[in-house]
Image 1: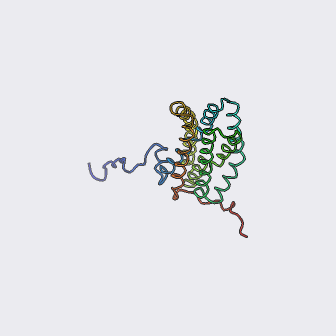
Image 2: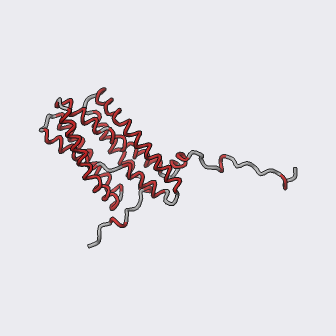
Image 3: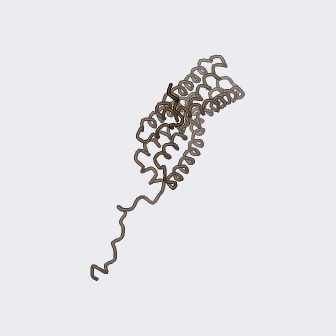
Length: 224
């Protein structure tokens, strides 16, 4: 067969990208690092309420009190979360998420101390309400995907699907992990573990500055 009629050589695997869209998504530079941190920080979202109920009900013998405390925390989150999100948009993820998470973790630790030392009941409400400053780690992760893949609808669709699956997984595993820790170790174990995971995950996530989206110009505070 002459060179002119020779069949073209097949394209080898070295010249073709991964066929799995999720593999391609996580191959984005910096994506694996911020995703790992975000998943660590997101898992406690399904742990705190269950852990608080087990811990408070065990110490005070009242599921009604435990439910009231956690309901107060949810109400506080509904008020504080939009404000925290606006600050993240205005000043950047790392600048706001880390101190906001530190406040939330201190609230969780204060709740543990209040329960352990039989503090007045009102302190439980105050301590748990402080956890409302926890930033929306899932929203921040979606913002990073939108920044990294702007103009690529297929990649953004894959990223949103991945984030939705991550949300479902964390909210399913979180309560199971919390109940297991509280039952197998001690009642405060779920809250303490959640606080450690949250702070560690946010620190890892915030450290990935190369993938952090720029602040939203429209939300900057006006100059005096």
